[in-house]
Structures are given as structure tokens and as C-alpha cells.
Length: 347
Ligand code: G3H
Ligand code: 13P
Ligand code: ZN
Image 1 (spheres, rainbow, N blue to C red):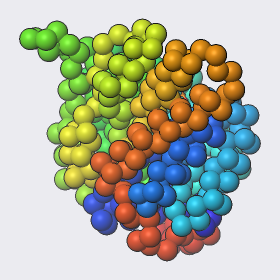
Image 2: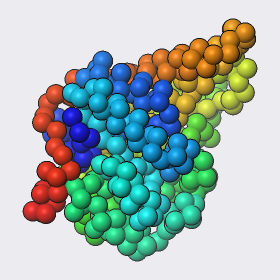
Image 3: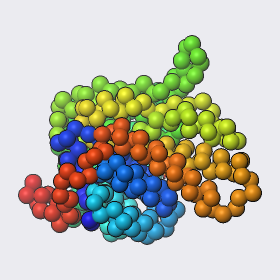
Image 4: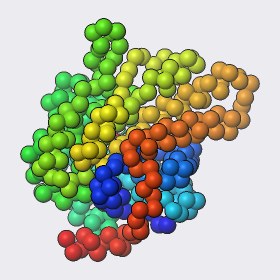
């Protein structure tokens, strides 16, 4: 099966009422773990690469690894998506590499740090849609800003600042009409990375999961029932994964992620794409630390990359089941970019 335009994966998810995990990759082990999990749960899946991931892997390696995954599991619908594109050029390069979907993150300026004006966001997002749709490529846009900073990307907003940059439902409706995006990333108080909030439980003193503005998702869904929303920063940062890291010499401070309850509530109200990166990073790091501490004599990379792959696989399986995509791989006949071109040309 060729790579599928993400729009079809999201349309089908909307029809059946489930969410689809969009998992970030940087290397072969993550791609293999995602695909094995997708095969074992029969899930359609979105594999995404950030600009940092493409730079790290020198672009062509990740692309060819994802192509290999598609060849190995031809029955699984897979979309290859650019995460947080920052310019027309970064989206163009991804499309030239055969990505079937791109995100243009116009919520921030091209520096990936400075919050953009609404007008500048519309202008760049519309330009990407104008370039991508005639090629059958899906476009995700973002309105409002997330917290945190990952690999130089992000405004580095504090919790208070994040709350001042939440997506406005009225403006969201305008944004979708102004740009023609296929999917809308919303800011509801999530942050990228492992440290998503500072609220402490008054009794235990432990960090609590971030308080998300779920009502914004409900309101956007009411206004635009057919809009596919995207939740970024959706790692759950499971305590058991942080514990493994710290048990084997890590020094991660107390933290908490987005609850599965919040994600499932989002999915009930129009969230179709759920971005998860950090959880696989945590799982892999814990597994590697464990090998190094328990068997310090080992020096074959396969002895620690293998367990890292297995640990990530477990995370993906859990997420695929929790988001509801499990069991839906064979629901539909996958479309090609050529099929999708015709759909956009008619619209
Ligand atoms: O959006 C952020 C993702 O977690 C990607 O992170 O830029 O470090 O690859 P990265
Ligand atoms: P996490 O850092 O919560 O995994 O979020 C990843 C993400 O949103 C990628 O775009
Ligand atoms: Zn993101």
C-alpha cells in the first residue's frame, strides 16, 4: 500500500468516532515499534517527523525507513507527516520527499519561537494549503500557542502565558474558513515535552496533570462538527516510565502529563489526531538505562536498542487501544495522493 494522505485517515476516524496517534520518529527502532504495534492492533497510523528529526537523520534516511515500514506492512494505512513545519520551504521540502501530509505551524513566526499575529498565521497557512492541495497533500494548521520548548521549537511560554494564548473558538472558525486547512491544532493548555504543568496537589505536594481548557474543544466542535482537531503535547508522562529512568540513575524531577481521560474526552468532541513523542522517549531512555545499569559489560548497541524498541512498542500499543484506532486498519480502501488531488479539485 502506498502512503495515504492524512486527510483520509482523519475523515475515516471522524466517521467511526476514534482518534489516531501521531507518533514522532527519529530512528529505525521507533518506526519499527510503531509499525509492529499498528500491525498487532490493526491500526491506521500517522508517523511524523519534526524538522529536528529530519535534520538529525539527514532527511532521506527517515523517509526511506518509513517507506520500508509501508512495504513491510502493506495492509496498514500510514500517513507520513511533517510535524511543526515553520515555512513554505520546509513544507515544500517534505512534500518533495513524498510526505503525504504537512503541518505549517503559523502560530509561531519562522523562528519557531515568537507568537505570530492572526493575519501572519493565515497568510503562511493559506500559502501552504495553496501549494499542497493541488498535489493531494494534507495540511494541518495551528491556532493559539502551546507551552514549553522542545529542541529549540516553541515560544517557551509559562503556564500563565499559555493560558493567555489558548485557541479562541470564534477565531478558530474564521481560521479554518480563511485557510482551508484539513486539520486544526488547538491550544488548550498543553505543552510539549516532559514538564507540562506546575500545579501541585495540596495534600501530597506532587505535580498534578495540567488543567486543560477542554471546553474550548467542545465549543469548537459545536461550531464546526466536521473540523478535525489535533491535540499536541499529548504525552501522558506515565509515572512508571519516569520511575524506571530514575531507578537506573536518571534525575527527572516530579512531573505529570495529559490524562487519557482528557484525550478521550477530546476524541468524543472532534479530536482526530493525538500527538505523542515524549512517552516513547521516556520508555526508550528507561530501557536503555536499565540495560546499562544491570549489565554494564554490554557493548553491542543491539543489546540496548532492542529493549528500547520493545519499551516503545508497549507505549504505542497502549495508546492505539486508548485512542480507539485499534481494529480500524482494514475499514477502508486507502486513497493515493492522485485520488486526493481530485477531491481537492472538486471542492
Ligand atoms: O513538537 C515537538 C516534538 O516533540 C518534536 O520534538 O523537535 O525535539 O524532534 P523535536
Ligand atoms: P509530547 O511532547 O507531549 O509528546 O508532544 C509531542 C507533540 O506534540 C509533537 O508535535
Ligand atoms: Zn507539537
